[in-house]
Image 1 (cartoon, rainbow, N blue to C red):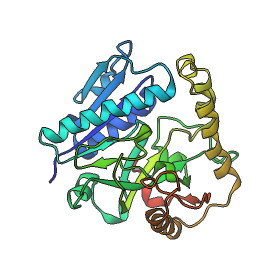
Image 2: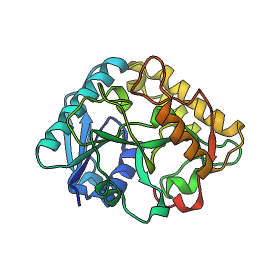
Image 3: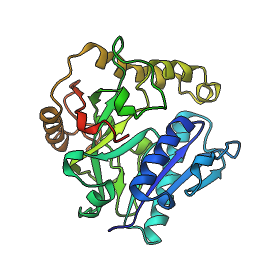
Image 4: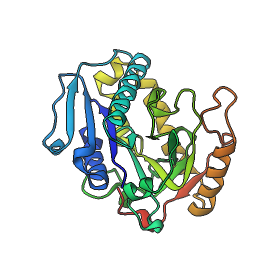
Length: 278
């Protein structure tokens, strides 16, 4: 088996980080998780016990500046880990979960260990929303996928999350500078950052985020909820296969190393086999 680490950086995000530690800890071993808290004013929760968790000086005061600094920092940490015996490093936000389709019957570490990764590998991005009028407010008591059934197939979340060589991630892990990407069959990146209207509204009241310029960004993210609430959900297996092929071929004119999909809004319903993953 390959040695695989996962890295992330968080600020005021224990709701997601708790789930992140539980999921990746089970898949990779807690000792292979590297968590960097953005700001020495943060508190490392007890649930991080057994991981490698660090308080670091706050990076940047505005969203664009902070994102560039954050990914430069994490790219450096990933390079260090690759130089210290790890075969692969997963870089994701605390609200992102790289999962293998349960029909494969293998763990994430088994799946990645069987792959020949040159520079990076991506999962197909699924951006989860809340179907208003059908799905209640999210709780931490049950798996997310027991509470949310609909996702927008999103090019923004088809990210080169797994790297095998030192490289530089662009802001938000959305691309690797100077390299293309490969989308693995049966691998998905699930994004839960904007899957609950109440949580989005609560984030508007977070003065720390608003001071960094996140207000406009968070308003944009409520779009996913509006799309999954208004569009008919399509067959998962059929349309994820189409999206994987499309995103592997099509590129936006402004960034050859990012996926594109003709600006299609494709909503899918998640099969029952995924329900207990996250």
